[in-house]
Image (cartoon, rainbow, N blue to C red; front, side, top):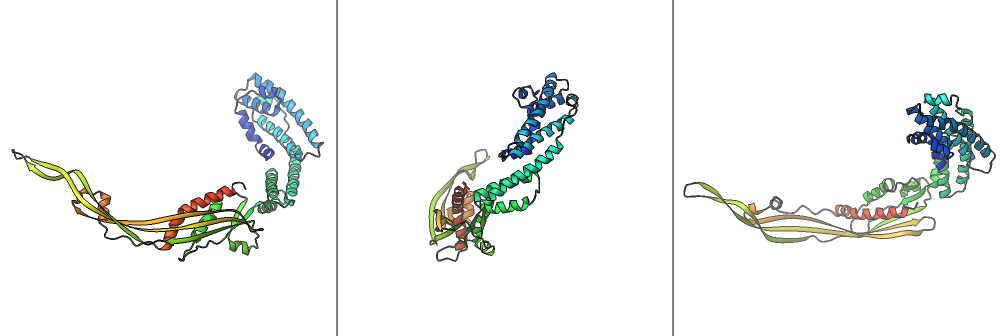
Length: 383
């Protein structure tokens, strides 16, 4: 992958290196002839009369040509090197990039007027590099394991980067991706207890999490129906069960307290001159608040199972609870002592109807879903 990145970003690397505005002398002294050429050309582009850059280019380019020729001969004489054609391709890509950069810099063209684009060598090296990587990918794919298929997939991607659409690489990419993928069946989720509850919405959210939360292209989740329709033999199964979901009794409570508010206009008075003034004082009221509560609770059991051996790979239980509540109120006294919220409560004479078990169940699963997705994420992090 490192070689592929180097191959595919030679031109970008040239621009980034050139951004240092170096004359290329330092890279030349280290024997990095490619970088020396690119930096010198860029310096001459912004400063055509720069003597150091001109001298660095005049020295570095012939050395780069000589190094490329010697290194190419060495690689061609090394049949045991499985990366030799990719390395050869990289050499020619670098020299081609130097030629392109020279063509865009008049001052540099005066120093190196006839740079070789290595067109024929590039074409040959590209074809041989693609075949080299293709054969490596084939070897990995034949191993028949997920890790080897994953490596094959990466190699086929390299092939496609070197020559898009090479041979049957599009089909091979699909095959390698499928063989490399951990196939997981999420079983239908039952809800045990006295109520007829559906957990379909919860199952749909868990399905969605595998695509948005796991973000691993080599893990794919299927429904039991999909697995059966496609004759799929999964690697793992996720078995989720809601145990002992119960809804308690509706409980009602009331609480009476005195509320007061200061600095409220309570009247007026006139002084001896007949001038009228507002009188401020404290107003009071007794507020009685009524509250009804309906609690629900239960347990989610989660197990990740190896399908072939039917052994449990990881298991956990997640308890949960949800309490629905509603309130209304009444008062005696001066309503000006009440806050806006308290007044709104007093406008209600009875509570809202208690939600049905299905609605309570939906709310009960909210914190459990967060716990379950953390459990799933932690388990599949290593894949």
